[in-house]
Image (cartoon, rainbow, N blue to C red; front, side, top):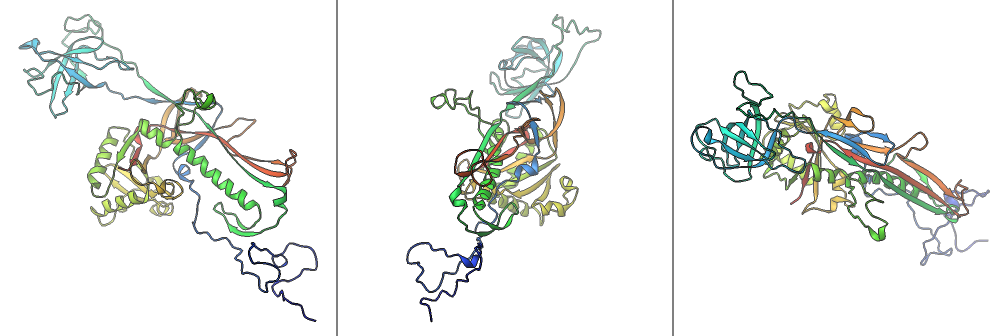
Length: 484
């Protein structure tokens, strides 16, 4: 006796067990049990986008530390020497002491005049002229300066009545037998005692959440897929395939929120629910550099070396951190390669890979290539986040983010909570944690399926939560590369 049609592809099992040969699956259409041959199915998932995860940037350049408050506060040093920008100079008088001019200092908004009588100062004109003199009198918003040259400041080419002059103190000069309390030059004003000042910054953590839900019925429907996930898991997955990808996406969100975060400036919010007081937001890396750091617009290989040297000169005026890392978008990375190739046959030679225990192999294994310019070492690598089409890789042009220069090493700051100076990486994450609850990365199951028995919901809910913020210290040493 023969059966028609023949199901040669089906191998029955003597016991009820889920095996690949004992199940039929049809996707609708003309497929039915009357067709003679089953479709050929690839059970292995095709990785057409390669490694899709984007996190890893903060692991390279920062650290993670717990905190217990709704806000993290830190203080950064101000400059050591006395200097004022945008000063204006009045015209000088006649010969001798009459040569003196009144230099107006733009005080206000935390700026006070701390220049003392008998301080010696330098006046710098934006046109390249300079002059030196000694302070003979002072007031709350100005000082009177007598030129050392036998000519008025305007005669020496200093712009008069233009609020473009830079003035800084380089020392002092007193006559013999002068008492500091007297102030010199017959003036009774005492010398100004300069107290060190600092600038205080703060940031608030955001609560990041996600959830994956699968119903109990779907959990009972067996459908295996062979996968090799980005987190290292491999083998056959059932409904947990989607849970695994939700976890991977959430882990990327933990970093993306720290990079892209913005402070909420809406005082009232939508119907009061998203007001600043309720949802303050958080300042991410890009926002911190735009607010307190340096922004380079339109870096190209054509303008390459001169433009890059301008960045170095600006770094000289800031912290002058010797080792820096460049995380770049593809085109900007190629522009750097073209710039370096135009001045040398190879740009890795002569570089001290101090950041990687002086091992060039270690740097290359991590994807970095190094070069040295001036007194600075730079380690360059592509930043996948800026190249991925699902994020910033699809945005090229006006105001697009094309790279970030991040200083390596640590900085010393005053921690308001600990009440002491501490050393921290310039870039690090603070997450909420205490002895009772660690909110760095939480996951838990709820529902009434999949091993969870917490409610009457016929489903398994996989919950993810984290509460964290990014601390960008000494942002004046960071550079954000931005498109034209």
